[in-house]
Length: 553
Image 1 (tube, rainbow, N blue to C red):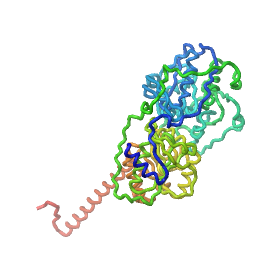
Image 2 (image 1 turned 45 degrees about the vertical axis):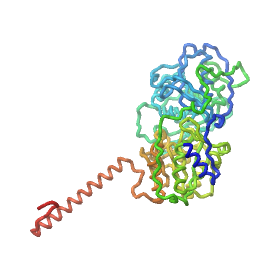
Image 3 (image 1 turned 90 degrees about the vertical axis):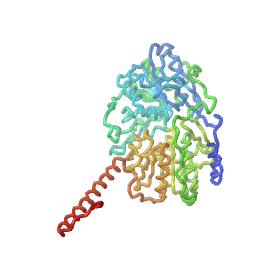
Image 4 (image 1 turned 180 degrees about the vertical axis):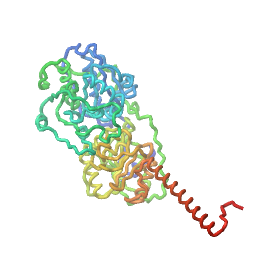
C-alpha cells in the first residue's frame, strides 16, 4: 500500500493530483453542527412502550443519538436493531465518530410488536435497510398493524421497498428526492405534483390521511417496475404525516420531527412547529451507549479482501494516447480507484480526477468500507467540459458516494458532455447508478453491485448478473464488483482495443444465453459432421467404393 501511494505521488505529479494517506481523524471532513434542542414532554409519555431504532453502519450520527435521547427521556424501552447485530459505527458526515456495541439483529425481532419503529438516515444505512428482507418485513408489519412508523432523512428511501412512496406525499433528505419521485421508465405514466401541495413549501408540516400500501411480501419479483408506477410527491418541508406514518426531512429539523411525534402520540392540536414556543431542553449523547472514536484504526474497514493482482502488461505504451477521467466522491472505494489508476498508468494513459465542486478544494476522501484511508488532492470540479477524454470511469464504494454523485448536476453535465464526445463511459460497482441517475441507461444492458439492481431497473437499464457488460449501442461498460477487478479491467482493455463496435459476441449476454449459444453451435456442428459423413458414405456406396475410417485396417 505505501509503495503504491509513493508511486501514485510520482505518477500524478504531472496532473497536479496527489494522494495523501489519512493517519488522523482531523484530516476527515465532518458535517454541520445541528440544533440539539429537544421539546419537553412527559417523562412517562412512552413508559412501558417498546421502540425499535433501525440503524446500520454509516448512519447519520445525530439522527441516532438525538432520537435515542428523545425516546429515553420519555421512558421508552429502546432496542437498537441492525441487519447483522453486533457493533455499529455511525458517522458525522463522512467522519465515523461513534461505536454502539451489541446491537440486536433485525431477524431476531421481525415478529415483535413495537409501539413505534424509527428508521434513521444516512445513505449507506438506508441502502442496508432497503436490501434487508427482515427490515422490510418488520416495517411492513408495523405499518399494516396501524402502529407508529417514523422515518427521517434518507431513511425515507426504505419506504420504497414496502410500497409507501408510490403516489405518497412524503418528505426526506433533498438528496433522496430523485429516487423518491422516480417513475419507472417501463410505464407510460408521468409524475405530476399537486399545485396545492407545491404552494405550501414554507409550512412546517403537511397532514394527510393514512394510505394503504400495495406491498405484498413475496410478490411478483419479475415486475421490472417493482410495483412502482407513480413515484412519490416530495415536499421540501420539515415533516409530512400520513396517519401513523411520519416522515422528517433531516437533522436540521430534528426538533420539528420530535415535536410532531409528541403531538401525534398525544393526539394534541398540531399547529406550526415554532421553536420559540413551549419548553425545550438540550439533547445529550449517552456515553454508556455511544463510544467516541478517537483513532482511524478503530473504524471498520470491512472483512472482504479483494484480489489485487493486475492483468499482465503487454506494452507500457499500449494506451499512451488515452485520456481517462476518473469521477470520485467522498467514500469512493480506495481499492477501485487504486486498481483502475494503476491499470491505466502502467500502460501509459493519462488519468485526471473529477469530483463534486464542494469536495475538491479540501480533498476527496477515499475509503475502505467505512475507514477513511486516502485524500485525493487536486481533483477538478465535475462539470460539462469541452476537453476530450476517451474513457470516463465512475468508481463505486459505500453508497454515500454514488448517492452524492447521482444528485450532483455537475457530474451529470460532465458525463453527458463526454458521452456526446464519444467517450466510453464505465460504471464500477455502485458507480453504475450514477449513470442511471444521469438518464444514460434507458434500454442499456448493464451490471453492477447487487444492491443496485432495483434502482438500475427503475432507471430503465436491463440488468445482467454477470462480471462485465458492454453495450455497443450506448458505449457503456459496467462491472459488477471489486472482487472481479482483474476480469473487469482485462475485458475493458480488450474493449478499448476492439473499438466501439466490438466484440463480435456481445458481452451483455447472460451466462445462460452464452451456454445456449455454445450448445446450439455444438449441436449444429455435430449435425453438420454427421450429415457430411452420411453424404460421403452414400456417395461411396453408389461408386461401390469401401468407406475407410481412421484406424481401420
